[in-house]
Each structure stands twice: as C-alpha cells, then as structure tokens.
Image 1 (cartoon, rainbow, N blue to C red):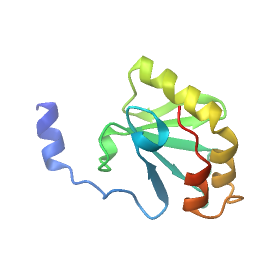
Image 2 (spheres, rainbow, N blue to C red):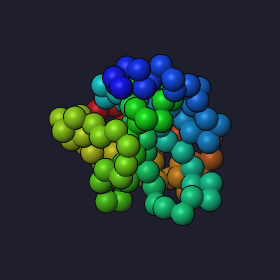
Image 3 (cartoon, rainbow, N blue to C red):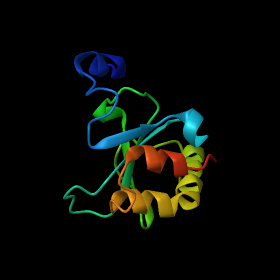
Length: 117
C-alpha cells in the first residue's frame, strides 16, 4: 500500500480539536504547524504535536515532550526541523508550561505571548 493511499482513507479531525490550539508557521517561524494544549487531565507532562499539514491527520503528526525535550511517538520530524522545534520550545518554555498548567487561561493570551524563532 502506498503512503498516499493511506492518507486517502484517513479523515482529518479538523483544523484543531477544542482541546488544542494550532500555531501556524507564520506565528512560530517554524516550517511546520505546532499544536499546543492545556493539561485537561492528561497523565503525562507538557507535550506538543507537530505536523507539516495544517489539517489534523493523526498519522502525519509527531508528539514531543518538552521537559525534557524528546520525541515521544508518531511521525518524527526531519533532524534539522527537530532541532528548530527544540530551539523554539526553549524560547517559549514559560508560555507553553503556563498554558499547559492553565496559568495562562485563554488561547488568545497564549498566542499573544508566543515568540517567533
């Protein structure tokens, strides 16, 4: 089965779920989309999801923890992009943690504090 055939059968979950905020390359300065969320009962520490497509195809997304920075599962980024993600996370660590912990309550406030790479 070809890779493109796999995606034909997969339906996007939408631009983002209500639990996640998607941050565009224009907002982050990264060559891919980053999804962030609040904890909302998750049993793991802060994570981000990434993908090259703004439509939410789970099989095309990678999951990275931020404390410490590490690939967790899914579609891994190319190594140069992974390094960019780590650099971006480090420059936005307080914002990502604040949003995760709901110290930053609103998505719009979190987005306003994000710095571009």
